[in-house]
Amino acid sequence: MRTKPYLVFMDIDGTLAVGHQRVSQYTRATIEALQRRDDIIFYIASGRMYEFAALVRNQINQQVHMITSNGAYYETAERTVSEKLGEAALADVYDVSQKYNLAVNFFAHDKVYYTKRVPNFVLKNFANIVAGNNRVKSYKAGDQAFLLQHATEINNGIMIAPGHGDILAHAHKELADDGLLELSSSGKDNIELIPKGVDKATAVRAVQASFDTDAAHTLVFGDGMNDTSMMQAADISVAMGNALPQVKQIAHYETDTNTNDGLAKFLRSYFKMAM
Image 1 (cartoon, rainbow, N blue to C red):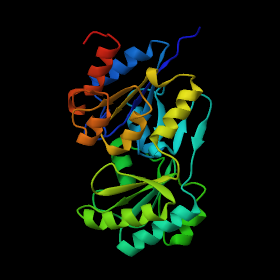
Image 2 (image 1 turned 90 degrees about the horizontal axis):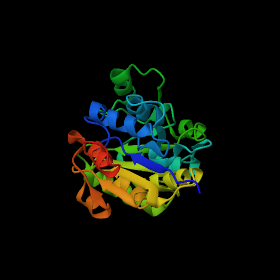
Image 3 (image 1 turned 120 degrees about the horizontal axis):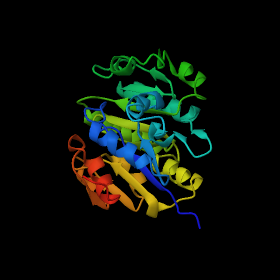
């Protein structure tokens, strides 16, 4: 009987990457060594849009597969799946953002639509500075009608309000009550906007099915609340040392921090590699 493969899912920010953009040489070497086995398959599983996640993936190699946009855009063994927020959810988010004067960025796999700029959150410039990435196109959404014209492209979004958690809380409640999309967060200053019925876990389970493997052969690494759902799809769920307390409570294991190669250290221990 064929042995089931191991699947390893790695969040980026606060998990795989240091400073949101750099994968250490030790971590790269660990992943590459395990890839030489024929029974271990690596995935990035990020809230980032595909092209921004690819900036980190490309520091390792093209054999690392991708789950991006919080599970709305991902690769299985056979195909690429692209879930959409949809017109009703887009209209709802736009209305709430206008009511509370909040900035929103909406993402396709290679495009950013935004309602207004936010200091220190200029995504297109971030991509260009980090990797000279000219594949990401950015568009200012003038009104709701403009966004709806692109509803067939937009996978997910993020509502941002640095230093205004109270306003975000009101917006979160209103969006949750409307029930048109899934809500998560990668930090206290944002609300992540995801298609209804979609999260990192739905993508992980689809990938598991495509590779004919199970939770017993699945490792998940994360640090934030948007990682907790996919942790529940894995028997080997690992919280980073820098993870939120709520994430550590859910995870079955804890490792060192992302700045101290916690992911690589756990992999080396679990798969009995030399440290």
